[in-house]
Length: 132
Image 1 (cartoon, rainbow, N blue to C red):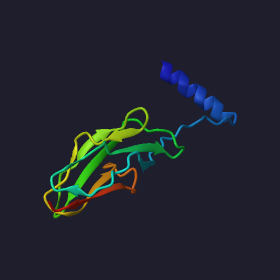
Image 2 (image 1 turned 60 degrees about the vertical axis):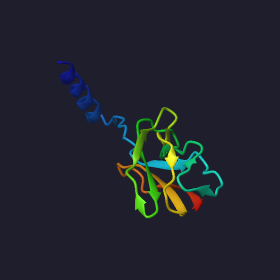
Image 3 (image 1 turned 30 degrees about the vertical axis):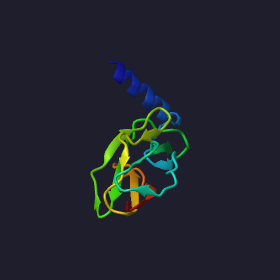
Image 4 (image 1 turned 90 degrees about the vertical axis):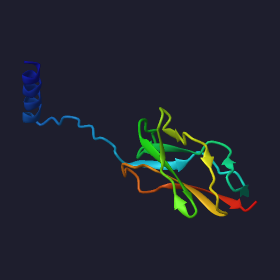
């Protein structure tokens, strides 16, 4: 009965030329770094200090809660499986595990992205690893 009344009211408003407000879901997000990788160099197998983090906002610059963010360590010569976090009320996602460096010297990267594809702009953190 309630649905019928709402439909009738909407039909009457449209008949007299009133527009109903329509809220669209903003699915586009922007990701920005919220951490700076410390200066190295680091040794093989070291743990990078700090917490790699990003902020996710919508097209109006408001924090987006509940967005799944993946943190993918890229350790030469391989890539490890990503770990994920979900943004909090401030739009912030933090790598839930320590960033452990691999056994090869060179540049090690941490690729941060939104797996759902809501943004095509990943964030990359980099550190240099030197042999012992």
